[in-house]
Length: 125
Image (tube, rainbow, N blue to C red; front, side):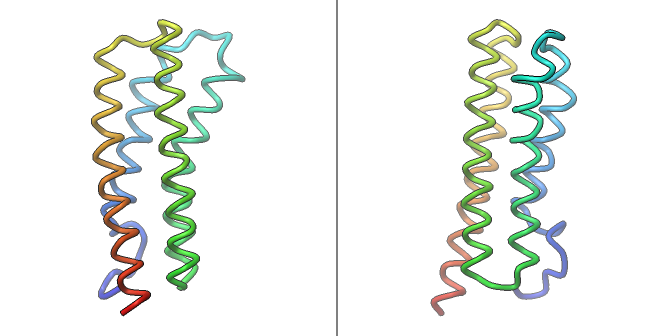
C-alpha cells in the first residue's frame, strides 16, 4: 500500500465520509419522525457502513480480505442509494436532493472501484 499509513488517507474513505455527512446533515433531517426507527435508521446505518468497511478492510493487512470488505462497502453504498430513492418516492426529499446524493454516490463508487482494482492488481503482481 505504499506510503499510506491510515485508512484516513484513502480517497475512497474520504469520499464515503463526505457522503455520510451529506446524509446526516442534509437528507435525514427532512424525514418525518415516524420514520425514526425505520428508513432513517436504515439509511444512517448503511451510510456509516461504507466507511466502516473500508477502514476494516484496510486494517486486515491482507489483499483478499481488504477487497472483500470493499465489496461489502460497495453493497452498503448501493443500499444507501436505494434508501434515498425510497425517500424521494415517499416525498421526504426533493429531486434536487436525490440528484445531489446520486452525484456523491457515483463519485464514491468510482473511487471505491478504483481502489478495489488497485488491490486486485497489487495482489496479483
